[in-house]
Image 1 (cartoon, rainbow, N blue to C red):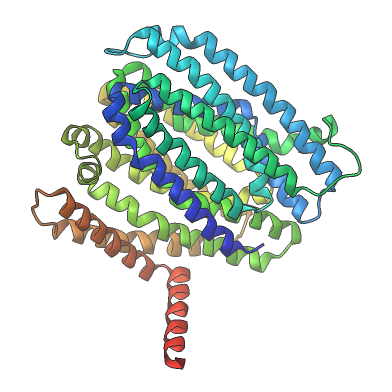
Image 2: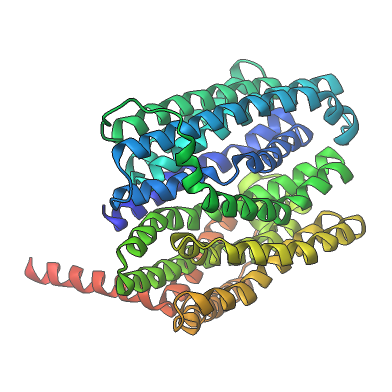
Length: 504
């Protein structure tokens, strides 16, 4: 399967999904209010915590599907593994519905700091969240299978259509049916059920026929238990590191202030859509190359993917950090929103950028079936960072939590990469630091700083938006010029284009 085709498909599909997820947020806030939007952020946090119930099974299935493509599984064994995981996920999804239903009244009245919304309305919205979360969790088993089969063209086309339906349809529901948070979550649940059905049907269409019908097979689960266990521990620790801030803020802050933090987190989180498609596409390819012991191609693919990550990530992250309030004002047209969420966005964007640098190295570890390093690093980080969050949030509020997120990810980049390259790709560490991190980041910082110095005083959202586009283009050009693999790729395309024009 073509890695370049899968990467292009992933960027087109996930880019559109990100656009749909962000474009309508100001509209939702106008219909629902910032406090109700805080409930959407609360659902996102709950979804992350319920990922604990996944037990590492979705990424494990993705890896096994990639190994199936390389000949490590028979049609019967892979179908049995899928059926076994389906059984586990159905049980987990039903548990999620029950847990949320039972906890909804307590969460609405005792946990969330609700000021304007009726508590009963909040409790009903949380109950609906349970059904949305259950459907989204069940989606993961099929999403993992499709990723492992490297069918990213279909997956991203489907996700684009479904994201348009999910987010664009929500606007129609709020505008023409009911401008309430309950209607919003009902629509989200309906689209999630549709997504689940579409993914399940298509997954089975791609798998070859087996001699016998698929069945629950405990032995298949035992064979992947060790890898899944490592992934589960990694997930637990990563969850503590990425969600404790949101958990504390949902309790300590008024719901509208939590809504501002959620907004800043949503915008900075869009950076993951710039690196996620690449790491998603490259992960099964790395697994396949490890299974085939093709070390030369493995190293080349690792560096190319890491450097393209820098190109896609650095420019938008630096623009968000440098012009955070201007970005929010140009996007939403709401000065109060920009004022409250802007400082948070600047810090969160830098932390998310640093986190994004670790995506391809982490995929390399998973390709080797090595989860131990991530477990140990996350355990150390929890020991250091969780107390820091408990200290920072009461004193500095949401901005303190944002700074803790930044420091955490600086730790990963400075320390985690050191330990990884001691065991994998022994002679590639300094090349990674130089070509993926230092040179592109210095070039991008210089360009974005120059754009800030040249920013003219304007009172127009349209002009500000054009200047932001120009600043992003300047920063991106500087990053590409400083990054070897993308620079070489674009130079070859330019030479080819000149040759075609000369031939014409």
